[in-house]
Image 1 (cartoon, rainbow, N blue to C red):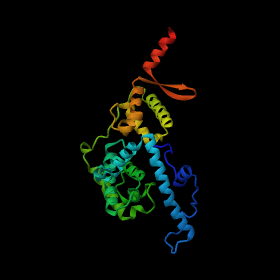
Image 2 (cartoon, one colour; image 1 turned 30 degrees about the horizontal axis):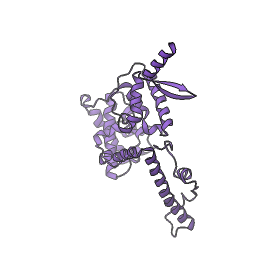
Image 3 (cartoon, rainbow, N blue to C red; image 1 turned 90 degrees about the horizontal axis):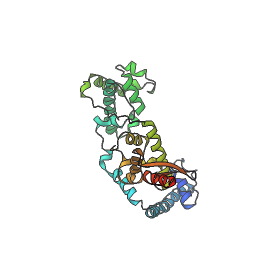
Length: 287
């Protein structure tokens, strides 16, 4: 993503672009539990490992040439930190993208999300294998207090309510409904900025321009959520205002927001213009 290969590229496409070789992926879905493995399967497995070495070396060399080794090392620190994967069940609701509006909905959301987190940790399975995010959102809004009401939710598989998980979810819903609204956390609300939508759109254009110019996937620099928070708060706690992302994009985003930077079209491409330079140029033209 930091070398211009887009938000997502398949392994075979990466191999083709870097080495020029074309992988035979026809054996990807063969039965790898059967023995002995066929010559074609062995060839497929060996080619994957062989090309992986070449791809790795090419990417490392490219990172060095572009001076972006530190970028990747910064990302690896996040991925290898135990705190990244440690999750307190009581805070599991914060990972959900759903936006609840009423205290009752938030209370149920917190309890059901906490139940799912404990269940997933106990069974050592992905959270979605226990209950999908959209189902939790549906449960939070509907707040079913009986197995029958739970079974009426269209987001749940048929018969799910009769499983042992059905009773556990009902219990979590009831715990949520019994919570004192005053004890609930208050979701952070961003103060709307003047012309917030227009500012957001300008930040999107700036992000796209910088991503194209530096051959970096826009998604890895900043998300739409990042841009919304930057538009509302100069000190927003977002990755786009930290480290290499701030140097590449964040500082320019703040300058654009405060009128110190402008966007213009030069030779058919979007470009940034320092407002001080633009004013000086305008003065010379008027003279």
